[in-house]
Image (cartoon, rainbow, N blue to C red; front, side):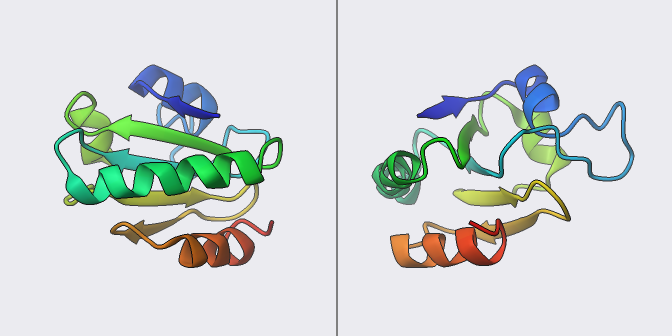
Length: 117
């Protein structure tokens, strides 16, 4: 299941920059965070692919969506300049960002390489 996050929820479930200067992932399983906009065509194409991945990796991976128009401060904090932008957050280590509507094969490859699943 994909969950939409507000800034407050993001701080609880992903990263709280008020408590930590350095990246410290708050989640209990790796996550993909999709920064998107309702008006974005590529974002709409990516949505069903993320739904498939959420079903395939249920219980192993969290997928979150952040509407950049509703959460501009959160988007600015991650320097989101184009949508879709995907933040891959492993349980340990540093996150990485991918830009654009990645095809499913590339998403699965990133899940294996970046998230270790």
